[in-house]
Structures are given as C-alpha cells and as structure tokens.
Length: 551
Image (cartoon, rainbow, N blue to C red; front, side, top):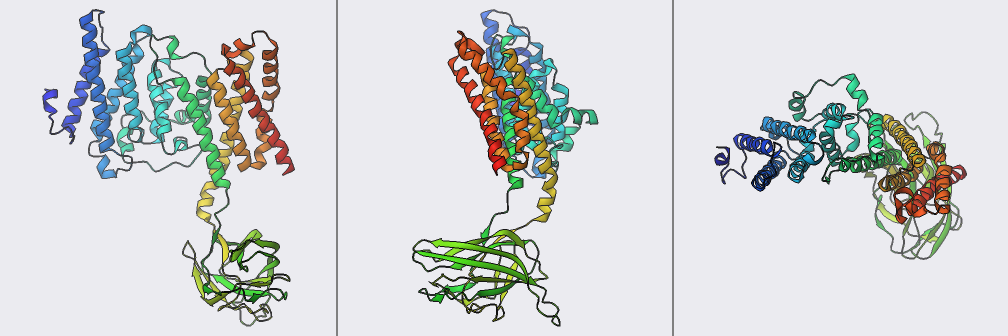
C-alpha cells in the first residue's frame, strides 16, 4: 500500500502522508536487511534488492529534508512537517541500534551500505536534527565511551564539522546562540539535560575524548570484515584540527585592530598644479568636531606634488572645550608625530599615521596642525565642504582654525589636510567578546596540553600513527598563528610543548642509528620524514620564543 501511495505526481511535492509511507518502507526494508539471512544465493540476492530499496528511500528522505528544511528556513516553514522529520531521526537511530548488534563479519557490505547512507542523511540534515547545542550535548553524553553506540557517535561527530559555527556547540567557550523553533520539538524526544550532562560535554571533556580516539590504534576495521568510509579515528582528528582552527581564528579576530578607512575628501576639487607652498615652515591647521562617540582618528592625509617627492612633516593634534564661550581657549596636545614622506610620481596624496589612535569626544573641539620646512610646493584642495559623513552614519564637521594656528592659509574652503584616517569602535561588540576572547585562549592552551600529553605517551610506546603525526604538524602551525595573535601567551605555548622537543629528538636519533630505522613507527620511509616534520614544527615554536622575547 505504501508503494502505491507514492505516485509520480507527489514525489516532488512531499506531504506528511508521503513522508510516513517512506518511513514505513524503510522500516520494512531494514528489518529484512538486518534480519537473519541464510547464505543461499536466493537469500543473498533478496537482501541486496531490499538494501537497494532502503538506500533509495534514505536518499529520497534526505532530498525531502533538504528541500523542506533548508538552513535558512523561516519558523513557519520548518514546523509544518516537524513530526515526520523527527520520525526520520528515530528511524535512523533504530538502524544504528541494529548495526551495533551486528559484530564482526555479521556487518556485511549490504548492511554497511545502509548504515553509511544513514550517516550521510544525518550529516545533511544536521542543521535540523541537531538544532541546538543542547541536543548535541544530550546525544554525546549518552554515546561517548559506550562501544554499543559507536555508529551513533560516528554520525554525530561527522555532523559537527557541517556546522557554520563549530564552537557554538560548546556554550562553555562561546556565548549560546538563539534556539531555532525545531529545538522545542526535538527536545521533547530527548531526556532532560542535567548539569552532569553539560559538564561531560564541555569542550575540555570532548577534546579529551577526541584525543583518546585520534591516538588509538584500535579501529573498527580490526573487528569487522569490511571497512567503512566513516572512520571514528579519522573524524576525531578532523574535529580536533577544525576546533583548533576555530579557536585560533576567533582569537585572532578578537585581538585584531579595527579597520582603518579614509574619510571622504573634504574638498570638492583639487588644484591642477602644485601651487601650495609648504617650504616656509608655517603651519596649516583645521578644526573639527564629531557628533557621536565611537570615532577614532588614526592619522591624516596630506597633498603631495605629483612628482618624485620627499618631505618631513610634523603633525600635532590638540583638543579644547569650546562650549563655554566665556573661558579662554586652552588647547591641550593629545598627539604629536613626525613623518618622512616619500611619494612616487603620479601620487597626489599620502597618509600619515599617528603613533596611537585618538578617540574623538563629541563634547570637545579638535585641531590638527601640520608643518614642514622642506615640503616644497604641493597640490591643494578647493571648494571645501563643511562636513563629511562616515561609514557608521557619524558626521565630522570642519571649521576654520585661528589664523595664528593656520599661518600658511589652510581653511574650510581651501588648503591642506584633505581627509582623515579613522576607525569605528563598537563598544557593545567588544564588550560581548571580551569574555569569549579569554575563554578561547584558555581552550587553545588546553588543547595543546592534551596534544602534548598524548604525543608523549605515543612516542614512548612507539604507537604514533602517521595520521596522528599529520595532526600534530597541523596544530603546530596553528600554534604559530596563535602566538602572533596573542604574543603575551607565547611563552606559555612554548612551555607546554617544550618537554616534547628532547623526546622527539631522542626518538629521531635512535631511529637513525638503529638498523631497523625504516621499520620504526609503522615501517615506512614517510614516517621518518614525518618525524622530522614534527621535530621541525616544534623547533619552529621554540624559535618563535626568541622572536617574541626580542619583540
């Protein structure tokens, strides 16, 4: 009946009834595939035919799920067929349960095809079926360390890198994200999440589990007659690498300075020739105000001559409170810098940066003054505007400086200082990220400690696999990026990996002297090359300590 319900007309317009029919077909097929099968040719052919049906049904369900529940779906779109999707989730896990009951040669190739298709379906639908970190925590807390749940665990771990924000699965590292509408439906099928569950699935505990699996030489292929393309050891190494990359990337983004931008030019046109004399030493100055906080000035722009041009400029920035008209003007120096400008032919402006950025206060008036004794003649601006608009909507208003401050003639209408270098400070974003930055740094150091402990154990026991060495080499590269983003923590990183340097060097020395060097660590020439690569990576971290100290 279920086969007849799925007509050609409704295949591309799935309804709840079609979904339910497909699920019943899947249950019927899996009952035969994972049931007792005699070794007669007829029984084996029947099992393969039913396996094909099960795989086709799973592919169809995956297509429907991706069509009905795209990652950008709205709430009202996602909840219409929530129950069939949850039923698919339950059906997949029942197949994993049946696969866990099969041991050794019992998990033959047809059964493995069905299991792998289930893993692929779960990964493709992870934005829906793992709609919240809480769902992942509940699942992982049940499956970690339980050998009977190995297939479920493999599927969950393969689904995690499919997320756009991998660290969002760990609320103890980054702030929790809003929960999608499907979260309420999915959590009804799961047991309540206890504090013990949250603790068991913290980033530190997850990393400890992943390192245990990644450095284990006992794989599923040793117990099964056929090998799966979904390896628990391999996905553990991939996850460790991806988590390390996200931790370093997030740390680097948080510590990065705001982007510098040029304000729009305050002049509507520029002189045709170089006619503005900058050789007398008389200063040019302009006054300015900003209408909102969050604007930081990092430098100014000056006109050059358009030919080969070299000059030394002294730039000063002052501030004063001019709101009280009865008080005398008292300008306070806030920044002073000297620049040697060397401009190429054809370049009409140059940017001169301050030693530090200056945050503009809307209650204050600022004045920028520039002077040179060897500037020669430069271009100049004409037909100046009284204000310019910045990228965040703030407005900078310019005004004439006192003639004693701008002796060379720069004013609102014409002269020098065509633009400013500025950046925007978002206090709200920075405040919300301050805690995340510290947690990311601590988490990356924890990852390094776990890695060094596992590498030390594996090197001592002689069980360091080729894939594990590749993982160590990748994390060593991430460590270099981390130390660039966090130079104050560079010594801590070096201290963590320092005890591995003599151990790896000793092992490499023994391997070179021994007659069986080619058989050491799995017996391949590539292994000894990887030994040297790890040694070089760890020594590069050691060399970075010297550069950090010099810096």
